[in-house]
Length: 533
Ligand SMILES: [Zn+2]
Ligand SMILES: [Zn+2]
Image (tube, rainbow, N blue to C red; front, side, top):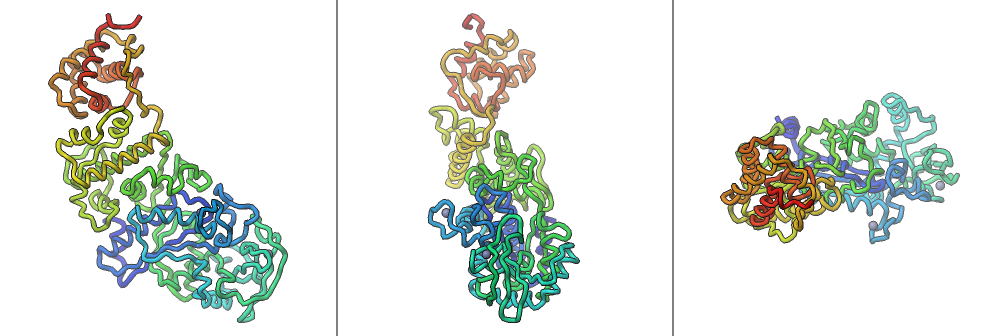
């Protein structure tokens, strides 16, 4: 059974599904795994007629801390300051650093078909006073919280430590303060120069009522408080927080013992690794969520996250590789399988169910979507590099019929993706320059058997249907008829048209060129006396 359906079958009554993100800086593409999982859970619940609310939060009262140092964006003088209180580094109209980075991230959600019922910003939630009762509860039970940290995580806080961080009235930092006393209305706090390594407190101390946005619960306690405040019943959890004794275990214990509530069901998920490395935002050059979403269309991006179960790591290395074209091919195989067509190559488990989940529109009819013609990505990338080609006409010739409105939209989307892939990600070998003028010098290296094959191909092309499939078959036949290994036949073609030893799928390469030019070139390359000395 599909994992999200399994989960939906385990619960009863209305469900609140939640996830949140600290906007420490540029948010990389791996961080989309949580929201995509969140969306798929909500879809599965709703399909099972479970009333479901989807929440997404931004932890913007968190300090600029060591996490921010892993991004290229941290601001030294603001270390320890709440992210919501740091100014927008780009000065492009956002009210804060947190808003600047969080907005670019959550702006990708709608395009991916992820539609939370509510976005909440913790700076606003704290300011509204909604967290006050949980701060009181945590302060009243400070000893319980200290005990949980020690027992669950082996973190020992001094007996004076209270689970709250005040925003220093003098320097505005929240990451550098410790609360050392609580009288039921006001807390005593100190802003210590040496409390943390990544920020320096100003030495101020004070006594204030910490409510209405003047303080914030520590990460684990804040997490558990949100579950109570919003009535969260299901929450996915990234691997970094899901370790034994880690943040989630602590939050679970706080939920039970401080807020007297069972923690939500958890769905742990693994990282997305780029090129075998754990993808951190520090490597954010071109791997920011909004940048990848610009190249990889929503259906394929959802597939990237969903083709493995949540507890499996995902390897994705789009730079200088065919990872993006392969993602399209996999997506096309999935559509073909969903449409009941024969599929070459391996299919993921639950292919039909998975296909419905990669669709952006949860109300779309998978059968209709699956039936739409999808031009192969690599073929498009090729066509786009040949001057003067009418791409739509070529694609309609491949399909053997005019494109429907939906198919034309898919084509446009893929053309845009292919152009951006060629600009920024494609390996050199995918870049193509057809040598239209003189015969490429590489032709001089061809042996008689290769020339014979080119000649046989030229003869056959007079009657060959002009599409990739048919031309690919004609190339094989021409090689076979002259006793040439197919690989050497293809090499001869690449030499004749590209002046190099390898290239993209030859049938589609020829299909993208016009017949007269192809036949003329084949005959020229086949005849040794036309060779330049
Ligand atoms: Zn901005
Ligand atoms: Zn201070």
